[in-house]
Length: 378
Image (tube, rainbow, N blue to C red; front, top):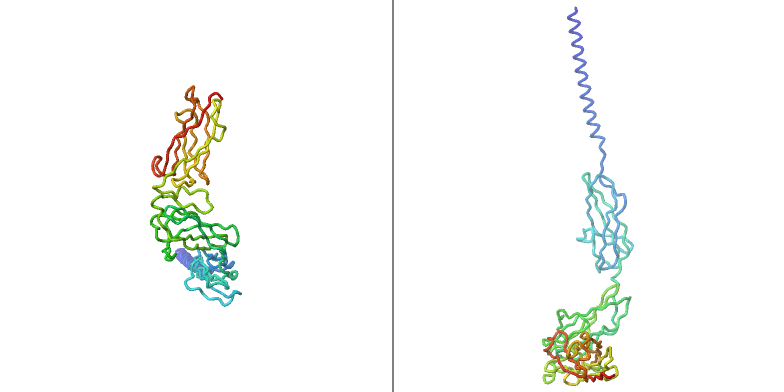
């Protein structure tokens, strides 16, 4: 009886353990099933519409902001730009306009733009479209030319031409850029001269037989516009007999840049600008020099250097250039070497005139000695 009871109790425990195992397994299955069926769909949904930034004018670049989206990250975005009527309706896709940015074309003028954005993640995709842009305007016009550019100067090799930009109207400020061009003898078939982008241009030997024009580009905050001068006279070689340039109408001097060999410079006049003679008590004095070419024309831009002989009588002023009349004034201060002797009657000066960039003692330069009166008793 005792053995039977023990067997019965053992069998009952086994059944209970088996039943518990079945119950636990069922709960696990139910839990897994519940977990699967309770997972929510998280495909993107638009939280705020895409927007467009940039100026709605032809030639401008507009850029799409995809807006904000709800859903599982990360998001990937695709863009499609659309052209619409002036009221933002009747839209259709612009072929190939699938980047985040779009450059507005001239054919878009008077219409509006929208951008269609597709947002995608691992759970799916969704789309949203921006509101319409402002009505697209044509590019703002730049300065308007009312009188064309001109230039002045002699059309011979070595001469310098100087441009005037002409007359322009439009919003200010207006700035100017220059490009000189060489053309055939009739002013046609022009092409840009490399590096000739300053307001002035010095005619080269290779320009002979051709003409030149200058193209001026005027720019303001709105845009840029260009205008071109009429052609010059046919470019000729400078006089082979003199090398002297032609004095421009109304000018008092020719430019140093236009003087060519065999012409040379000459210091043709000088004058003490303080009372003459130089006194023994002097502390400083000034001399005015005049430079001309060998044709007797005053020369502007000539570099003049002067020093006393012997040295150490007076300071050596820096090299200075002649003005529009061919003149330059240099000042000298007394040094310990003056007077050079107890009976000095002359102050001798070495004077050199040259073209900057030429060798000091070559090219068209000139040198001479001049003397100024000295009275040591004064």
